[in-house]
Image (cartoon, rainbow, N blue to C red; front, top):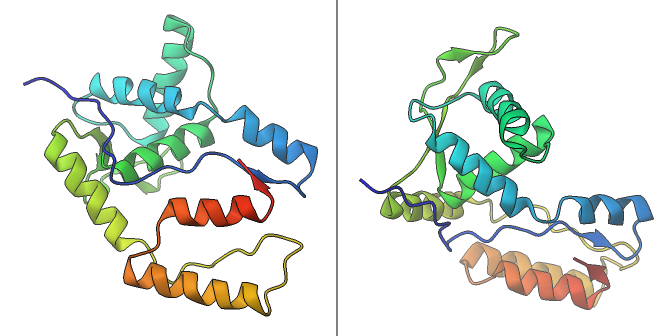
Amino acid sequence: MAVTLDVPLGFPLPEPSARTTDLTTSHAAAASVRGTENLRSRLRRLLQAYPNGLTHEQIVEAYAGYVTAQGWPAATPQGIRSRIKELERQGVVKHDGTPTERTRNGRLTHRWFLVTDRAEQSQRAAAIKDRARPDALLVIPSGLSSKGPVKALAGDIKASRRSGSFTAEEMAAFLLSRGWTR
């Protein structure tokens, strides 16, 4: 069976961003993690090489091995964990249902697997999108009042999210119009 590493379109991933009012270090941090698609692509290839799955600790160790052996760019353990969670939201990776492995500290942990079936990828991404919290906190950009028109807009956005008619692109357009940068 051929392995498909295409990313489903069902769940858009956010680009790192900082507000115009943020410190220069925040802008530098957002710029430094752009291009995370390359790390996600490398993690898909890594998991493809391990059909029996790997724990987060094992993924970090295996990635470090590829850094040394293949010259892959270094990545932090947190960056790797974040990209794995993004891949899970896309339906590209999954974990075993019941954690059976143990971390170095003795805590239970899951094994992560590459999802090779395109239909399963789409189904998983849709299921995760359906479980997204419609009541998640709406963050108002600093410098804006949460009263008056902005408060009314926040109410409209929350209602739209609950009904499923609000999109990430609409939120991005709103934030950009209020001075946020990508």
